[in-house]
Amino acid sequence: MLVVMQAHATADQIHAVCTKIESLGYRPHSIPGAERTAIGITGNKGEVEPGTLDDMPGVQEVIRVTKPYKLVSRDMKEENTVVSFPGTDASFGGPGLAIVAGPCAIESREQAFAVAERVYGAGAQFFRGGAYKPRTSPYSFQGLGEEALQIMAGIRDRFGMKIITEAIDNESLELVEGYADVIQIGARNMQNFSLLKRAGRSKKPVLLKRGMSATLEEFLMAAEYVMSEGNYDVILCERGVRTFADHTRNTLDLSLIPAVQRLSHLPIVVDPSHGTGKRNKVTPLSRAAVAVGADGLLIEVHCEPDKALSDGMQSLYPDQFDDLMSQIRQIAPVVGRTVERIGERAMVGAFGRQQV
Image 1 (cartoon, rainbow, N blue to C red):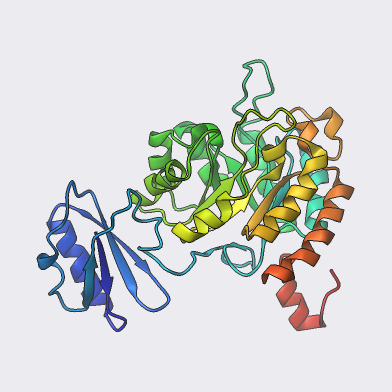
Image 2: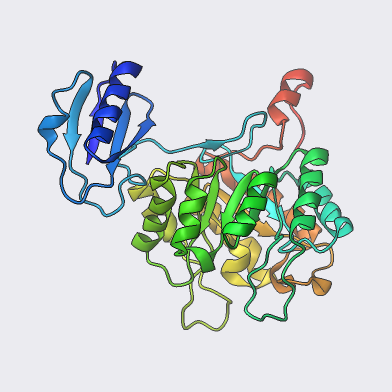
């Protein structure tokens, strides 16, 4: 069920409705919109009797939500969700494209800072790097753990980029939560429901990757798990699904972007690195992702990809990333988007238009 408040409803009236919902044994989720607040109801086994709520002061209507996912649906919130970060122009879902770049795994301080300097210079607002790596083989590089998190915290201090890194279980999530700005839930954990619930109790935004064989509904239901625990800052990520194709690591499903945007208010970004697994496919699929309306890109970059300890074959050289950013800046305005460096607006205001 969904309670839609009147445009002029007061904070006290919204609080009273939430209190009433709790008294009925359910959980209210109050999400303000541009014009009015909607309150989702979860925890109900069946339909809530509308008569208990629709006569309360400030309530416009009570709507039955037929979709299995409620909080992620545009029934709950019509306008797009924007996940923003205080003190920076970087965001997911706003007019600017979110550009996330960095190595698949943090291998050393020197390697991470070398990549960070290049992707920052090219215009990335977010730095990605793996501290915990869920690998197919138990003998493959598993990540540096907290040491990698400390290295990325240093990158944030020096360059101002926000940090995104993956948590693979509840224990690692505790550490990631303390260092990162965004908690990533990887494809292998998209249906790790205990981890999703724990991420939902975090105060940090969550970037949720689509599972390797997940349907659209399963993907949105995984996001629902996070939001049902009270964390409404969720970013979806398409990273390719497994098919019969053998010319690519995964099949990047760009048709998912408009499908998600029709059904959900959550921002969605694209990871063409994992989506293709081939360096020569990353740039063209990045261009296509922007053209189809994605809210951002996750790009793997390594200064020496042939020596990378993880996913070197799909990592761009820094010069290739520079070229990609130049191309993205040409495509973005066609679909009504921008690509700005961190702090660019402040610099423009002080010194005039910066050349990018």
